[in-house]
Structure formats: C-alpha cells, structure tokens
Length: 224
Image 1 (cartoon, rainbow, N blue to C red):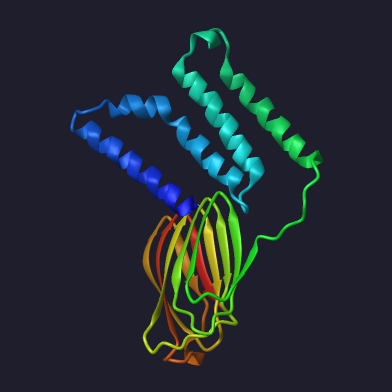
Image 2 (cartoon, rainbow, N blue to C red):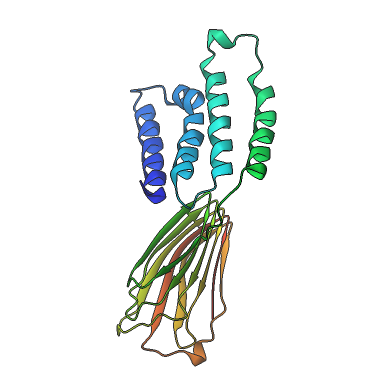
C-alpha cells in the first residue's frame, strides 16, 4: 500500500469516527482516547516494509505505539507496572542495535523517464531525477519527510501549463527546473511558506510549470 493511501485512509477513518460521534452513534472521545496508539503502529508498519522507509524510526514507532496501547487498555496482567518507564530504554536498545548491525549501502535516489511523477513520503525522504522528454506534471506529497526533485534534464512539449500538485506537512519539497521554464507557485501556506527562485525573464513562455501547493508547517522551494 502506498504511503499516500495510508495517510488518506487514516484521515478518512478519523473523520468517520468524529462524524459518528457527532451523531451520537458512538462514543468517539472514548475511542480516540483508547486506540490512538494504533496510528503510531500503523505508520511504523508501513515504514518497516517500505523499501525507502527508516527502519529505526519504524521500530521506535511500533514499540512506542504498542507500549502506549497496552497502557490504554489497562490489562490486568500489567497492573502495578509503569509501562512508561520502558519507553526510553527500548528506544536506546533499538538505536544501539541499528548502529552495530551491518547495513547494505543503498540509495534513495530514483531516476525516472516517466511523463508523470507521483511520490508521497511519510516519515522518510526521496531523491528523484526525471529526464522525461514530454513532462506532464504529477503529484508530490510529504508528511514529516522531504522530497528533492531534479527536473533539469526534463522537457515540456505541451503548449498549456504543466501542473504539479504538492502537499507538505512538517517537511519540505525542493524542485529544480531547467533554465528556460517559467514557474508559478499557487496555493495556501499555513504556518509554512514557499520560495520561487527562478528568473522569469529567462523563461520560455511556452514552457510553464504551475505548482499548486498546500504547505503546513513546512517549506516548498523551486530553483534552477
């Protein structure tokens, strides 16, 4: 399952629970108060099995989520045990194990020739190079992570503007474009911002990229 889909499912599920609570069908406050650690566990599992996800962060999220979930369930077998005392040593053990376990060198850099890009990073990062000869835009999204996109070897053949939809929450997206592209950034920054460093006087009016963005506690930058 793509991380974008997971985030969408989590948001929909939270919205449904809130709606049912407003309709007095369920006790939404009790559900959130009891099962909120499952969100941490779900995010951790996705990163654990994701090729580019941080395994250390995934393990920490899963263990912390499990510990808090056990605490919220108030199991009799755990009576008299302060679960919170186990969180810090568990994290220390994980980090120590990560340092001593041999790791294969790998690169998060993805090289594409596809005409459309579609990437979402959750608690991780991605480095993308796209050299499409007929670039047509796409979707970029990150939550608690970062994305670097290099489009300097790509080309726009359409006479109409090409659109990239960008979503940033507690992270950042950096896009590099060819010198002859005209770039416009539109959208809504909330406790965040964007920076367009392209020089429009050098741009080709027939090669226009529009970045439609929503930036929440993060940043978006476009440059040559």
